[in-house]
Image: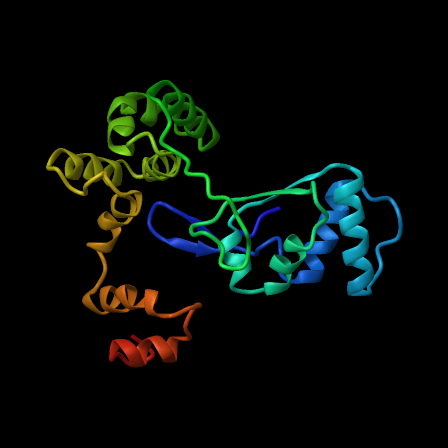
Length: 226
């Protein structure tokens, strides 16, 4: 199941409709993807019972992607996962360790070069960019640090030859540094922002959840339209 609410494009982050919009939607998705064949009730408690039974009876490994977006919107999902019977297993991806789950963190290291090249070529084929990517495959892998998200993002940038050329040129000059994925993926775009946008962006971490435009404008000392 996916909690993804944004997608990274070559030039910005754009909102998408998430799969999980509520606790009840989450429970129905569990039943739907498990192949449950009975009538799906409207009552939340009955949905919980059926979803729990399906996970336990069919030995389902529940995999939730981009869990950090769910955690800020719906705390009942965390409670549901905590209350699953012994033996039930859940695997999640998240940009931080969830606060309300007894999660065992597993760090995911970069790929080796062979794996990185396989991913890059597959991603290029998926985006119909084989000719551009094959021509620049060595440089793309070098500046990616063999990190999957970076590989996918750089290949998205290949849709604009000028954009890709600028990334490669910046890398040759020693910037942005590759020690940190966020620094690599976003420094190039950050430098293109206006001063007002930079000020707003760096203030976002002080909020526990996404602020309104009015709240962010107040803290950044900007008018709401800015």
